Length: 197
Image (cartoon, rainbow, N blue to C red; front, top):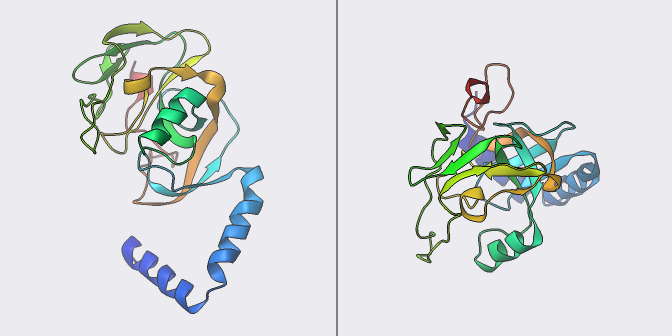
């Protein structure tokens, strides 16, 4: 069986031999976009690749597609964190959950989410403003987001909860690099067990 790097190298070689392949793939993705296909190349907070938007409600630990609020998206674009306001994030907390912002990271209902320690500076060395420390009750109509993929993701640690209406739906990774971690059931995981709360 081919390893992922050799697969992508072979795909790149085939694109150079068949210049029509890339436009055909782009056209296919454009046609499938209204049905739920999404190509993540906007941010490194989740693995790059092809995702499928599913029907359903967000729940803690689930990967979702979110359209960031204009204020947050504008700041992210100004700082070079993202090129498009739609991106994939994991749900950290929903209405009724208590989120505590600490030096160690986000604690949801007392449980620390791994890899969520807020940083003081971004990768360009600029200071990062953090959401105020302390406990915060998640109010009706709001959701906290985070990334399990990289510790320096720009997420709710810095801009706080976002309106629940900005969540466009759950996502399922179809083809990602590096591979997306999965639960034994085959469902993508955000690497923590929300049922243990």
